[in-house]
View 1 (cartoon, rainbow, N blue to C red):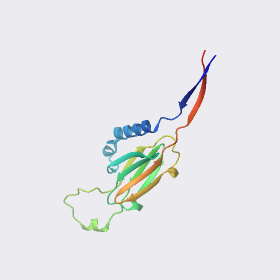
View 2: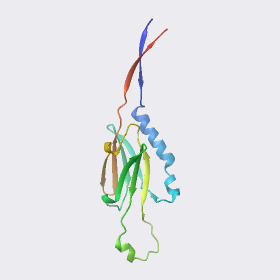
View 3: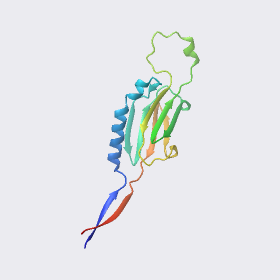
View 4: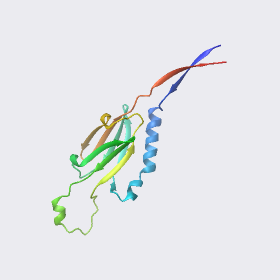
Length: 147
């Protein structure tokens, strides 16, 4: 009777994980627009670099203190709540093409991210960059008996 070692992975590889996240985001991209509970966030780029998943979100016109980043139930939540500026009250607008009010968005996180403590965020020149370290794939070796 011979035994042969077979490797199995508990988690999918990084490429599969990133592709699945992007597919989930693309599928849900337009849902925030229809809710009426604030506008959708700006354009978003999601990419993987050196074992870290990056979410780059355009948030022009916001101050760093007006942006909140949270995690809940394996989702990344980003909320921008601008303060009401006094010069806006004095103006009589005929048209408003720029975003106003609260903006919200959510993005799926890779499995294995337990809390927001693992994330880092940087806001510069109107772009919010959130870095999420990807969990390492756990490799297990299981011996299977061959009859």
